[in-house]
Image 1 (cartoon, rainbow, N blue to C red):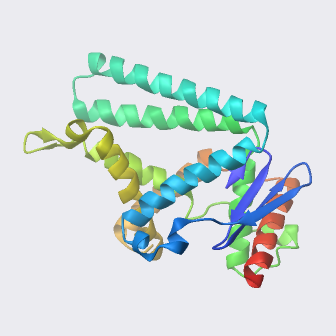
Image 2: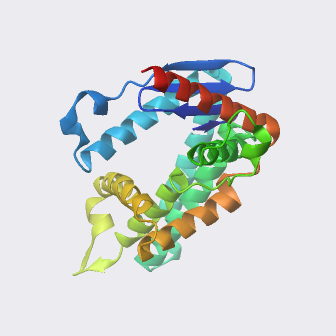
Length: 257
């Protein structure tokens, strides 16, 4: 997980967050999935993971101080306001439900990315790129203590949440296709949106395990392109060193678990 001032790495039992001020915070991963096996059922496990991920993000961002947390909330509030305004005005300008929903989802995604960048800090995409390079290097067996070696690895990763966003947008638009006279997205409203997020988590799990499938290649191509052009930037050495430090610490803690 990338922040505007560092990188947080999470293992099965522990997390570590290396920050630009030189501190490395760490702690145990507290998840219901480790304590209750019945919560690991398909769809249910993704719903739990989503709630815990949001909670973890909010918890750690608050540790960055009141000013940073307030700035993120303000930008997210502006994003929601713009999204609400578009949902009211687009139907008056566009009379095709499919075109309207597609445009609404794409613009909503664009404003959300702007809000995250402004709320988290200008360096967030560089830290995101550093996060991916460190993970790719670790999975390839490279030495995380050698930033120059790690720098050679790709800043694109298939398990990135950016790929999840591509799946979500596709399913949200799909819900507005007329099916027997019924428009699913309009009929179910917010329930459908929550269902889309949960199903998207499950689909991403399947896609990264079967990357050679045609559907997987199409979705991963979209996610990789979005990562390359928008959600990651080539990191500088200082960004990479923090990502590697966080990952090294998580590996150390997991080995002791």
